[in-house]
Image (cartoon, rainbow, N blue to C red; front, side, top):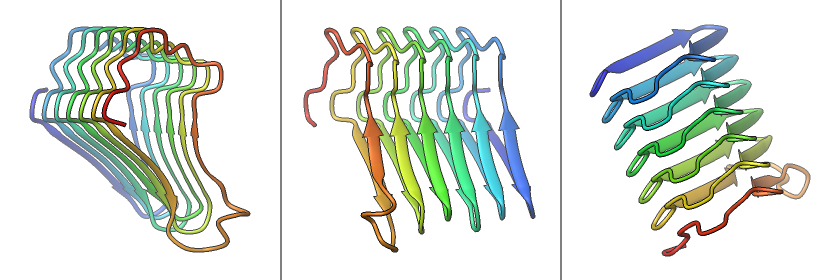
Length: 174
C-alpha cells in the first residue's frame, strides 16, 4: 500500500476504518488517507496491530465542516513503527481529536512528524493518555492543538500526556 491514496468523502459522515486490523510490518510509507465529511470525519485504527509498520512520510487527514474530526489510534500497537516525517491533521468545526489513548508506541519513530488538531469553535486535542512511549523518538516533531476562533478559554486546546510512559523517549528539538 506504499504511496497509495484512500479518500472517503461524504455529505454527512466519512470513515476510513482499520479497527482491529493486522497491519504488522505493512508498508504504508508515503500513503495519503483522507476522510472529508460535512458532519463527521474519522480515520480509525482502534486496537489495530501496526507493529513494525512503515508509515514514513504518510499523510492522514480528517476534515469536518460542521462537526467532529478524529484520527483514532486508541489501544493500537505501534511498537517499532516508523511514522517519521508523517503528518496527522484533524480539522473539525465542533471538535478535533488525534487520539493515542493507551496506544503502545514503544521504540516508535515519530521524528520530524507533525500532529495538528485544529477546530473552528470547539475542543482541539492531541491525546497520549496512558500511552507507552518508552524509547520512542519524537525528536523534531511538532504537536499543535489550536482553536481558530471563538472563546478559547471555554474551548480548551489540549496536548495530554497524563500517565503516559515517556521513559528514555527522545524529545529533543521541542
